Length: 457
Image 1 (cartoon, rainbow, N blue to C red):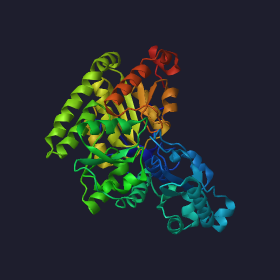
Image 2: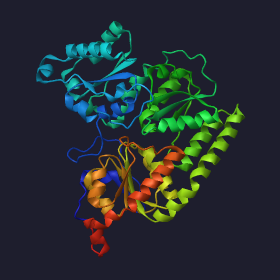
Image 3: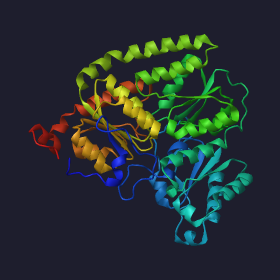
Image 4: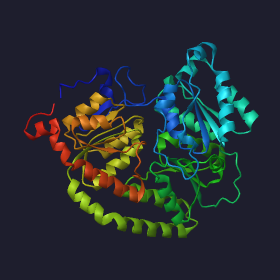
């Protein structure tokens, strides 16, 4: 694969299992000029907070930042949809010179008067960090004037990586926690953290817990409500789905309110079942919860098992590449693909840490490529080398897959189809089947060349 070189500075971010000692570098800022697939700090904060449906979300910065993150998640709401409107102070050259605090104040007052939100989040962008606007002071002033929480989100894009945006979002959320009443909350209650209701996934997961006899106090943040978040400290357990995004909030709630937490995943049969069983096991003082959980799992798997077996027969032996935001999602995807009889030949993430990559190393077969903070050239190189049949990623990875002439499965936050839970596993299997077996790929130049024995490079 010499025709697609790897930059020397990137070599330690790539690991081929079995070929060398494990020493993968991660957690660094992206290398300048490589066109990282990562998003910025601001985007990281937006993807966490955006689904809170009855809050105002105002971006203090240029209009481009608001356009970039408008409707960024396929996050559905069962009621208000204020979150789907993208507001910005639209800072211009004059504001950069003289400051944008007055403009921010006017925008907040006008928007709060117009939409009557339960709270407001104000996102700082790169330019705000450079010119030094005191966003927190403006938020405090407007909060006093309008008697609602107005929360600054310190998410200047240049401050770090997408993970720093997650942290900024959690710090803003934590200011709401503990502000509401906790009476009438069941002793068998949970908060779901890191579930964003993409395609209605939070509704599917909540329905499982309701059938188990467990109350869901707040979902943070899918189909989220400000008042539910304010009383979330009354729940008995935090269940963290997206560990990279929301573990910071879980740690903060544990430190202040003593709320324990567990990490789970709702992707695939194995991890969904384990998530439900782990919650039931936590409430061991109520054995009826475990009994209901066992019946639920049996029923859900029995309903989809026959079709999954047919799909497995059609995709067995196909090769898949995975590149996602958080490594925890990659763990579940590897298990789900193996359940379907597929081989994972490449796996990577934008925000994985040392422990995540050690887990991936242990899960993967010899020869599998593991990537941290990859770029399009690296992904293309190893997709070709490993002759992948399917690429699972997000909106930025889709063009890479199609240019390579292989199927693509959208497993990121822009999609509209639920892929979580048992219903989601069936949707995922169907999408994999349709993608890898589509007849269109035989017309792709790379596939045609490979079929004749030539190198697709």
